[in-house]
Length: 72
Figure 1: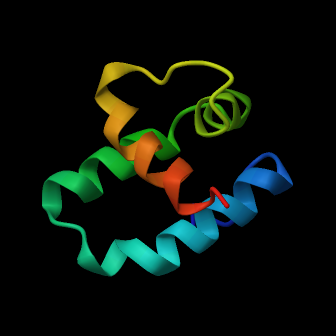
Figure 2 (figure 1 turned 180 degrees about the vertical axis):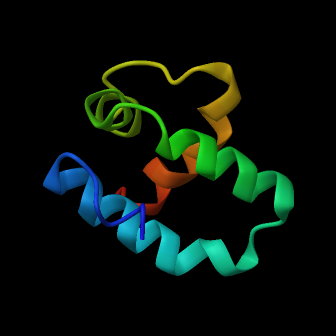
Figure 3 (figure 1 turned 135 degrees about the horizontal axis):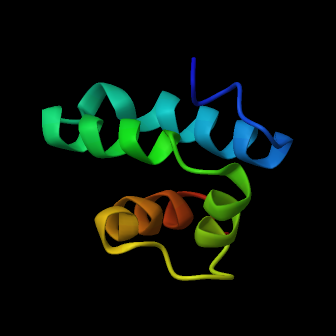
């Protein structure tokens, strides 16, 4: 639910699709990291996912995975 009710529509779309594709296969550590990431500001998340800014180390692998999922 928290993936789809974000502050900006772009992150709603990106995180809803990512969650639908990946949450069921995540282990507890990955789910914890994903949950912590959801507490971050949407504008920051969007800049990280689109490569405008580097993500913090604790989210870098997850953000990279999210970004790869939506690259054409």
